[in-house]
Length: 224
Image (cartoon, rainbow, N blue to C red):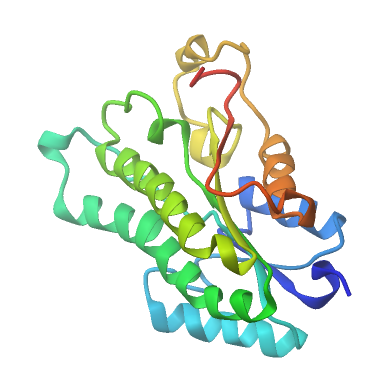
């Protein structure tokens, strides 16, 4: 039995934008997929994560073998005036939330000798940070370090952990951005959620078993 038949895929932040596109792509690849929104599971709360993931496993009668940590928020502002709450909310959601979800699925993945974890970071985590996004940039850079550590810890267990770093992607989160940002994109256009989803689907596949600890840019050469 293939992993697609014996396991479930979970996408946090999976009800809109990039997350919704990932859900649809994984479903098209044959996975049983659950996309979680903020109303379904508060990733900042480990108890809520455990309850939601247990419910998914019981509902489908299968373990979670693919996890896409896509849940993320922004609370932009210059560091000089950024509040503690804005800093903490972004780090707790974008980075600590990914830790809570990952920790929850590692046991089932190890027992099944198969697991795919994909962390959705950002171009701002790998290049010069954007002014006004100290919290967001820190959270997304932290995800890359987290990805590499989990990859090394789990490499002998059949579990991979990789990251994708989207650039300027057309979503609700970017609809109010200045069009001048396009000048920083060598491709000359924003990307689509589907283009990010294609990259995630490869990293989540059985065929990507020897890709581990990698960061795959989906940014129209912004980080080149």
